[in-house]
Length: 491
Length: 88
Image (tube, rainbow over the protein chains, first blue to last red):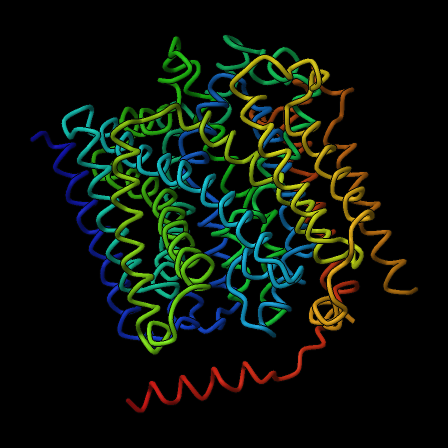
């Protein structure tokens, strides 16, 4: 084992031990009720909620995909992904998050299928939402496991194989999630969020210094690859506009983010989250984008797939071995904080939305629902491992498909919370038809004529809204009681 | 000014941000480069991000309504259950 590998392994062991300790502490604090295991008693304050939601939002797409994109398409990556997210996501916390939090707090809802199914008095709405969210979350979990394995492999320069990293991260995440529940995943996310923010800033400064300073290396990019410092030729304006509707809009629909927003102690925690979110994007995305940009002149000639590993490659090349281990910790932190949240959310939905409807009373008694939730976490981990072994596509391809699917559930969520006249049939039409057409847009050329140069999310979003309005107006609205259960809270 | 009017102004400002984000006029610009390492796109969108944060402060301080939540039956039941578990 080389010196580099020894440092990487030592820091990885320390890092994973800290996570397991937090998981064990959370297990000791958790009361075996569904409300406490799945939602941590809805008692998170502003700091914990902000860091846990942000860390949950950041994943392999941010740590690996974004610097890779900056390497290929330049500095415009900031506006394309980060600014669009900084603008739309906080607005969605207010528009959707706040009203959902109010209803969840009052009536005890934990998941989107549970909450929106109740809004329309409809098991069909709950079931369709459940199927769609599981369908898009499972591949997203697989991207996290793939990212964890790739990071360890590239930082140890192939000395530790991909599979070891993937299995190790999955096993540790499964353990602290199954034992610690929401409290465990939230507090580990706080630690992980701080880890990737601080280590990211440290790597940014140290790599710049190693390359002669911020000005010297950026001027080198200006001299050798000036096109990477502008957007013209790297981005298409229609694609630029369309992207606002994909990742930024999808975030509030991520079941793992939505569920966390409901754990806020008071509306003040949501307010803090809304204000701090844009600043966190500016603080963290700038660093990884610049590292990817500098990589384009320091390590030129990488193909699209290899450039996804530019961040760990730059860390491996320019940072001393001891900091290298911290680099791995930062990448894993971003990945694991999302992976644990997705595993817990899927387990909650399987326990409450699918089996919960048919569970006999004795299973719902104290502790049994929680035991079932823990069993599902183990099952999801096994399925994710199988997916990571198959590796169905690149991280970016899988994530983009899943993000579009999530974003297409947003019109239904908005209608449920704002439009009293919206109906179960309208919501079903707006969810089912666009989501059935989505694979046709992504995997076949048959419908490409209807995009007019935009990304598929634009025509599909228009279709979703039109179907929602027309079908709702033609069908009978839900009972006045179901409507007042929600709208009386909004004032 | 009513809540609805303030909220409408907020959404209008957000749409203005979308137009500023598209800034088709500056797609080919690199200069002016601040401090020799922050090109036009980065400082322009960085500045917009700070303005969005200011806009969110405006939202939470002056627009965001106070919740009308009372203590529900469910909340009481939950507290009872937690007490029971703690005594087990």
